[in-house]
Image (cartoon, rainbow, N blue to C red; front, side, top):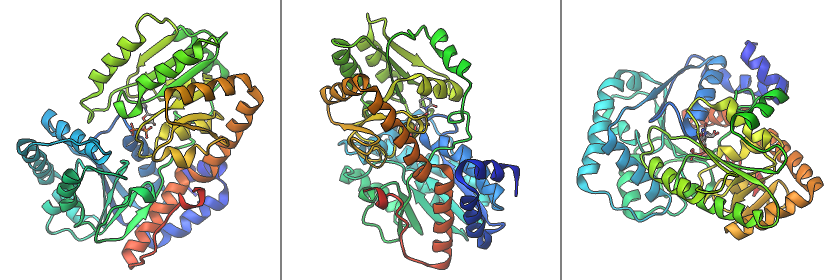
Length: 416
Ligand code: UDP
C-alpha cells in the first residue's frame, strides 16, 4: 500500500481503504482530467488539491487543469453563479460572447488532453462550454456542480443547460439541487481532508500563537466565521449577531477570509464588512493569503464556536472543517449546511442574526452542551464528510457511467 493510503487508513480505517482499492480495480490506468477555474480560493480548489493525489495513489492517471480568463469572463461567470443561486441577474450578449470565446481559447490549449482522457470532470459553469469544443472526445464527461442551484434564475439556467445537457452525467451536492437533464445525475456531498494542513491536529503552541499574532483576547469567548467575502455568506448578519450577543456576554469576533481569483466581487463586500466593523476593537477582519491553511486550522481550533451564516450554500466546507475540530456550528438553514448541521445535535440552524445570537448565547452559557455537540459534530464528519468517502463515490460513479448503471449514489439521503 502506498504511504499516502496508509496514512488515510490510520484516520479513516483500513476497511475504508480496502474498499477504495476494490472499487479502483476496474479503473486502473484510466486517464482522468479535472478542470476548474481557480487554483486557490474557494471550496473547489480545496477539494481538488487533495482528491487528485489520492486518486493517483489508487492507480489512476489524473491531471488537474485550470482555465484562464479575463475580468469580463469572471464577471460573467460570477453572474452565472449568482443566478444559479437564485438572483435575477441579467447577463448581456457581450459578456456571453466573452464566456464562449474564453472557453474556445482554453479549448485550443486543452483539446489534445481532454479528447484523449477516459474521464473528464468539469467543475461548475466556468469551463462548462469546453465539451462542445472537443468534438473528438473519446471518454465520458461529467459536469460537477458545486453550487446551490435549487432555484436557479431560469433564463440563465436555460442558457447554461444548453452546454450541460450534452454531458454524460452530472453531479450535484444535494438531491434538491438536481435539475431536469437528459442524463444520469449523481448526488455526491463534498468532503474535507483530515490530513491536510487545514485539518490535521496542531500543537497547542500554534493555537496560542494566533491569539498573539492577531491581537485576540484569550480571556473572552471567540466567535469565528471563515469565508470568502461574499454576500451569500452574510458577513454583515454575523456582525449583527455578534453585536446582539455582546450586549450580554463579553466576546470577540473573527471574520477571516480571502479572495478567490475567480470571484470579482470580494473587494466590494470586504469594504462593506470593514465599514460595519469600524470602531469595535473586538471585531477582527482578517484578509488572509490563499495559503493560510494552518492559520485557519488554528483559528478554528481557537474558536469557542463557529458560524457559517450563509443565505445560500452549495455545501460549505468550512462547516465540516470546524466540526472536525470538535466545534458546534451555528449555520444558515440552507443548502449543504443542512446535511452537516443537524439542528440541536451538531449545532443549530438559523435564519436571522437574532436567531444566531440566541443560539450563541445558549452555547456560551451551557459549556457541557457545547462540548457534547462538538463531539457529535466530529463524529458526523468522520462518518460522512471525509475525503475517502468522497473518493469512494467518485469511483462508484465512474464505474456506473462506464458500465451504464443508472442507480444514483446519494450519500446525503441517510442524513435527511
Ligand atoms: N478558505 C481559505 N481562506 C479563506 C477563506 C476560505 O482557505 O480566506 C477556505 C475554507 O477553509 C474552505 C474553502 O476555502 O476550505 C471554502 O469552501 P466553502 O465550501 O466553505 O465555500 P466556497 O468558497 O466554495 O463558497
